[in-house]
Each structure stands twice: as C-alpha cells, then as structure tokens.
Image (cartoon, rainbow, N blue to C red; front, side):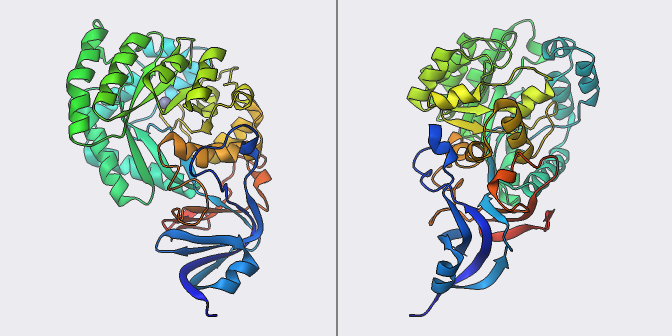
Length: 423
Ligand SMILES: [Zn+2]
C-alpha cells in the first residue's frame, strides 16, 4: 500500500502534547492534568489542518511529507491561545509603574487621571496607521512566544468613533497577520473624562449608540464590561451585557478583580462565556459558574503587575469543577505578550501544575473564546497551529522561565517562526 503524501510532517518529538478529547468541551478537574501525551510523536499536516497524530514510526509508515521538520526530541504542543488581551493602544505607562512601586493603588492612579485614562488620551490621538504598527509588533512578539490565537478587546477609545477605529484595526490585522484575532467590544472599560459627572449618560451612549454600531458593522463577537467599584456597577454592567446579547454579542466580564461586587454571579445570570480575574469572587458565585460552564479566565500577570499579594484561587476553582483558562491580560499596565510567563506565574503563585497550566492556555482558553472546535488541541481535523519548544518535555513549562522556549511556530500549516524569530 502506497503512502499518502501530505504537505508537512513534523517528526521525532520528545513529546507531542495533544490535549485530545478537549474539542467538544473544556477539560475539568483532574482531567486538566491529562495532556494526552504521545512520546516519540509525529504530526501529519495538509492544507492547513492536522491529518494525523501518532508515534513517529506509525506516521512515517502511512505518510510521506513534501516537507519535513525533524524536531530532534523537542516538545510539540498546540499553539497557545490567549483569551484576554487589550491589544490596541498607543503610548506606555512606565511612570505609573514607579508610582505603584512607591505604594499608589490602581484606583488612586485612575482617580488622578492616570492609568486607563492616560492610554485613552493617547489612543484617541493616534492614527490608524500608528495603531496598526504598534499592534503588528505586539502580534509578532506574541507569535514568537508561541501564541497563535488571541482574543483582543477595544476599550481605549471610549467614543463611538474611536472604539470603531480600534476594532477596525483588529479586523485588518486579523487578515494581514498569521495570528487569529477574535474581537471583543469593551466600550465599558472606564468612564471617559467627558462623562465623569454622569456615568449613566455614558452607559446610555454605550447601549444606544456604540453596541448597535459595532454589531451592525460586525466588528465584534463579544461584549465585555469592567465591572468594578468606581467603574461600572453590577446593574450598569447587566444593562450593557444584555443589550450586547440582544445584538448578537456574547457577554464576557472583568469581575471581582479588586473587590467583591458579585461579578461571578452576574456572569452566570447573563449567560456569559467567561469571567476574568475573580480574585475576590464568592464561593457561591464560582460554584454557580461551574454549574453553568462559565470559564474563569485567570490573569496572574495582572495581579503580579499590580504587586498584589492576592491571586485567584485556582486550586479551589479546579476542585469545584470550574472551567479554568489563563490569559496574559496584555495591556499598558501589564505589558506581557508571553503565555509562558503566565504559566510560570500560575505555577508559582496559584499552585497550578505545568500540565494544568498548559490545558488552561490551550484548549480551555480556546473554549473561552468559542474556538474549541478549531484550535487548542492537536487532533485530526483541527487547525495545524503548532508550537515546537526547546524543552525535552512539558514539565519544563513554568519551571524554566524568563526565556523564550519557542523554536518554531506553525500556523495554519505554515512555518511562521523559526529559531524563535518571525519569518
Ligand atoms: Zn483585562
């Protein structure tokens, strides 16, 4: 019997982390540790998709590659999925970093017109081209660190025109750049200065003008709200998320990050796909999230950047059957592109094991942005989004940190990063 010819064979992996079984629904509890590892593994790829995954001998018997990549015993895994980024912004906030070191809190900085509001001023001023250039660099860095799919939020425009500008930048980049960008409308990220004396007026603008505009132009899949004391309360958040839902935007939430406001409960109530942060979430809220399969997107790099001694209670969440995913929260106050660093923080600060953290940055992260059927695991029929890492096995993730372990990245079946550099 002749061999089937495929475009690409990836051979001789030390381990192939398949995460098989995670496509239909996310991996929960003890299943988060079961990565479906194939030792001495290979992958056959054709037309951008995975055709087969198995032991190298078996794959070589069945397939012939027009091209082959000999991984020489490296770790092969799904490209990372980053389910929470604030991709589009201008400027930077290094001064604020020093203020935080000197003891200023996030809310104090915001009240002094810094924080998000500084970035809003700079993003409003920036042209599309400027934003595009910034984002392209960011996306290249993310790709070089093994990330092949991201969710990206607007939220530094805070006028209809500027929010649309940021979402349009994402749309163009999604077509131009190898990374798939899943867009989220986050007009409810902060109260802009022109509405600071009447937050209800700004909520009305979001509900009556921004959401219908964004939905009409099909610029977002999700609608998110920063539900927090001093930002948007639960009743305002509910109003915005339900209006988004009415217009076909699936709800997401930033909740219970700095205080317990009942964001976890609200996420369940409005049928959100995910709730992020959750450092102060109630036990009851988290257990309800488990029942309704609302994914908890944990962002340990955000807590780290805020110099917090508190992190989300990942161990409890996993034991209660909450779907746990991990994201960078890439933004100007938490400037990190690498899910590898996030894994290190999750292991060190939240006591997730490397296996659990890998599940949370791949297949569970894919489910948090409605991409579970297409990416996040290495199974026949799924996209060939593959990272090859300079590590002998998966236990190196989190353990060896602060350096980029990525050797190669394959996106939609094409080699886009080689020797850690964008091609
Ligand atoms: Zn965020």
